[in-house]
Image (cartoon, helix red, strand yellow):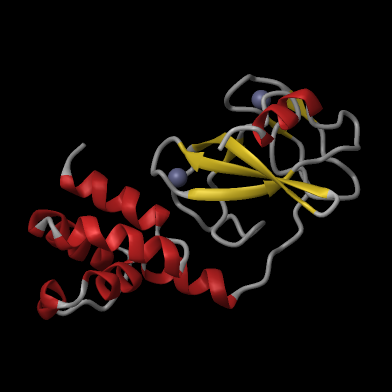
Length: 177
Ligand SMILES: [Zn+2]
Ligand SMILES: [Zn+2]
C-alpha cells in the first residue's frame, strides 16, 4: 500500500473520536504518512496550511477528513428506497416498499455511494463488504468496510420484505468480532 492509499484508508476509518485517537499513533510515527494525509486532506477541500505537518496527528486526521466528514454531522439521512442490480452477486433487487433497500438481501453487500444515508454524495462507489453485525434492541446493525477505500459504514438488517435479508447470513455476522 502506498502512503497515499494508507492515508485514504485512515481517513475512511477516522469516524469517531476514539478511532482518531487510535489511528493518530500510527501517524505520529510516520512523517511520510503525515505528508500524504496533508495532500489527501487538501484534495478533499480541507484548509490545511503547511504548518499542519507540525500539528498533533489527531488534529491533522480530524481536519483532513474534509467536507465529507463535515457534512456527515450537518445533514440528516434521506430515505431512499430503490431497486438495483447487486454489483457483487448480480441479483436483481426490488425496492422494499416501506424502508430503504440499501443492501442486497442475498449477499448483504452494499455500495459506498452515500456520505449521509441516502444522499448519494460519496464519490467512491466501491462495494461495501459485511464484516460483522451488532444487535441493537430488536434490530441488527450490519457493519461494513469499503473494498475500495476502507471506509466503515453501517446498515440496518431487513428482517421483512420481499425477500427479507438472508437471516442465516445476518446471524453468522453477529458472531464475528
Ligand atoms: Zn448481492
Ligand atoms: Zn469507498
